[in-house]
Length: 186
Ligand code: B4P
Image 1 (cartoon, rainbow, N blue to C red):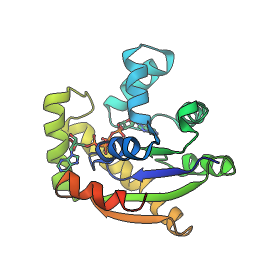
Image 2: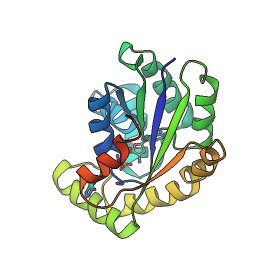
Image 3: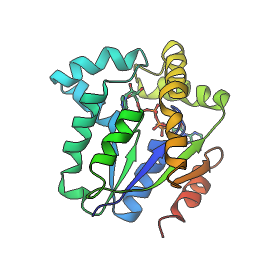
């Protein structure tokens, strides 16, 4: 049995930043569906070709494709000790797909990153200047926030009913936020 811990929050909340650190410290796999999709785009795979314009506009890649990609990834050896899911699930069908594999990969906790929208916009725009990520634009950010509210936020309620939600104040020093999350892994 390999436990999954989910990092959930709006775009730019720092899920990726914290997931890398937690996965390394606790010997867990770090699975970022955003990074996986960006790799597909760089490698010009069929999936990458489909994902590119969808992501640039700030929309979500279709559930079928993302679920298939995620389930395949969980089959890798490095997931045997468990994994941090960074950016998955983002919709109810994605969350339900995890219910189908819960005997092998049960969800342990869901960390919900809380940051106000003004701070998020600043973070994403400044990341866009250095990373060159083509979805870090004012137009795309607006769509990403709308989609977060509509499709992803309802998952908080879904997991609250299972008593799995831990809310994290994700504003402030990265190390302090890290310690606040890490104490739940000890
Ligand atoms: P992601 O790659 O998941 O992008 P994100 O939500 O914008 O990033 P994250 O919250 O991880 O932010 P980060 O740590 O980098 O998704 C991109 C796209 O991929 C989606 O829009 C969608 O199209 C597609 N996709 C991904 N998963 C999908 C799924 N499951 N289904 C369908 N489509 C999917 O932090 C942001 C910035 O803030 C960084 O620059 C960081 O340095 C900075 N930062 C972090 N913590 C900070 C702090 N405490 N203070 C100040 N700055 C901080």
